Image (cartoon, rainbow, N blue to C red):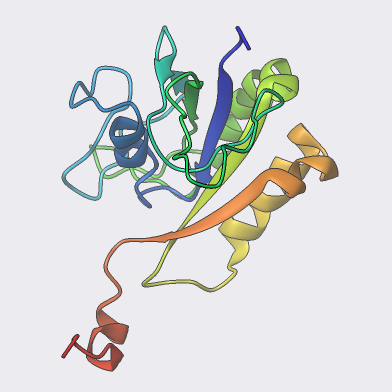
Length: 175
């Protein structure tokens, strides 16, 4: 397969989409995927690296995927990946001002409709400290379906990100 798999990172502002994008791309260069060390949102437009990168782990399956022999480890080194990092709704900029959701949605709609046919997988990031479906999450889910269609739900995975303090005491230490 010559064309890279396009992976879309989706979720509310501040859930770690840009951090995951840098990790997947194995880069600490935050010129494209802007990571904030504060609550300020730096990703205000859809962005992706100018070139693909090779995926060396996990279990992404495309049309060219063939199951390895029983005693053989899978080889994913031939999979090319492009990651799209989208801004989340409900963000606050570095000046403490609310970023207008209407403008973000308009920009995301234009970008995603142009790339919709290319998206092979969607990773929805959700803050583990606030896993509830709120108004912002509901708006983003509706937007996701409007841009990519109901069929895109088949390639959707949800990742709970960030440290969930409230559950830490309930986890038993290995013993």
